[in-house]
Image (cartoon, rainbow, N blue to C red; front, side):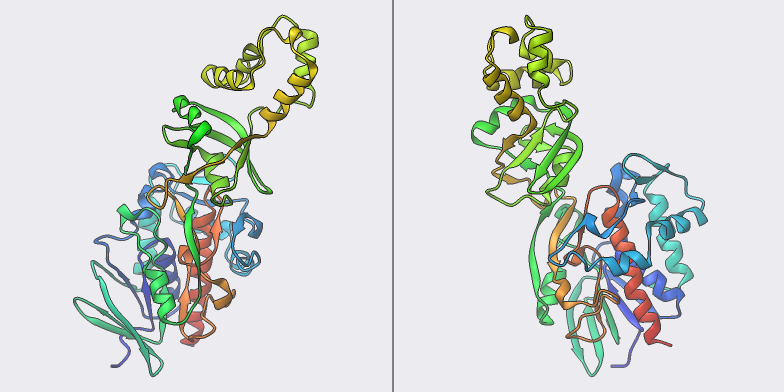
Length: 396
């Protein structure tokens, strides 16, 4: 079979569309295949429908991977400022929400529309509703068969993401394909996902709907954002962040009063001895949360009648309240997937497999997972751009 294209990109998500558009504008004949009926479904639901398309604080240390240095090359060569310049060139209004997170003023459809316009500018052959039935490699060509037709190209890009949010059609296809080509896969797991509580911790489920600004920690990772109690356990930005670092059987910590200086409770006892602990807590925390913490701390009566030891103990516990989740809400609620195609198998410059010339893997399919807040989109843009440069160079 003769080549039908210069590169076949599997997956019409953020990474796949951007890679194909960039390669196409560089002169390559690029094809994008996706089993879904329309492109960019995950893009449209991201950021509450407004697409948190990048983060101005993007840096390699804000990504998880078995190789923490792998993302450095791609992120340094295609930056958040580069993508923002593209957004502005299309006249898309944007704003910074918090912590460097950039959102569309209007709708995520603006970003998808921009990507599709970029694909048209690059002459990309975009075909949705094409379920892949077979992928083979021989004589320097990748042959991809669908129910409708077969295609062939010297370059194949795996951009089908991970299994997070399966209701959107997400699967582990990328990993199955990688293994077929002899590439190792780091065990995938849900990331940026709510955590579930059981046992004594389940008492906090009664606070469903209550949120508070906290510092959440898992191991050495610490995030200062809001935590939200749910009917299943814990969620909110702070919890989603630490969930990527959490492992089953481990505990996480929450500092409910991160702005309090050491010794604050003894100072309260000295300054307001007739005040009760729950009243002090309620000055900073939501009432229902303050009452629950007060009950569990067991500091009865007025502060003046409590021992210094009991108050020091309460202060310590409030600064590092330990929860041991019994699990997470899984891939169904995970915003992204941690793990994936091992970076040890790929070139950090071209995203090309070392063992299989012409095979690339980008985006969420790879063992690179960013923090919450636009970091994973920036990895999609940067890794897609890196692969596109290699595809373009191969055609020169």
